[in-house]
Image 1 (cartoon, rainbow, N blue to C red):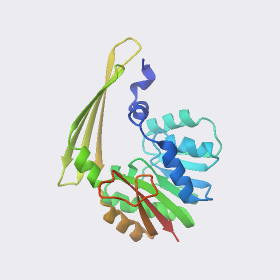
Image 2: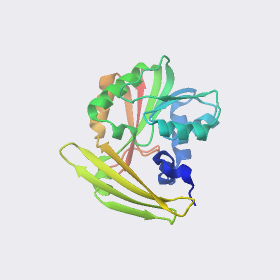
Image 3: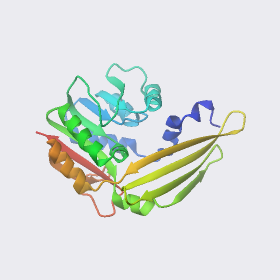
Length: 243
């Protein structure tokens, strides 16, 4: 049974993401960044990738807009002098340091507008050393068109949720509302409501914004596989280089 600590969405988040193969994601990233050891991670969430990089002795400065997510990440990582967690906005951050690589996993860029993405890419560029790689993913238009027009219901006895999506064609966004009902230690259900807006970005637009920010040699993969993006790919992974 879930205890009271699961009242926060930041902790329920890990339950929602329990089917994500973070080991595969981390392996893909470390292969692409090769010998780089000093990494900047944007929108780190609850620190699933961060903690795996920490276990591989990478030095990571990770930031997220949500303090609750960062608290959860801190619990997961524990004391580690090579990891720094910061509370910052993707579209408006500044760190007095430079890095060998940058990453942003699990749809972070889908949570910002095109204008914000342009600013974000430029800031990432300015925080990287020369010949560094920036690796990030986005959910594709195909994924939103095929999967984000429905209502989903999940129930495992301890947690029940209803996930509703409203696709706004005019703004190119998807409004997501999730109502959780979580059973506590008194065998009562607590309701948690989470509302999010995600933005649909075409890979052509994202590639143009990367090049405008100064990046080059942009490669686009199908999910975290070393294979080209397909028309029916659910996730695009982009790798760009600061020369």
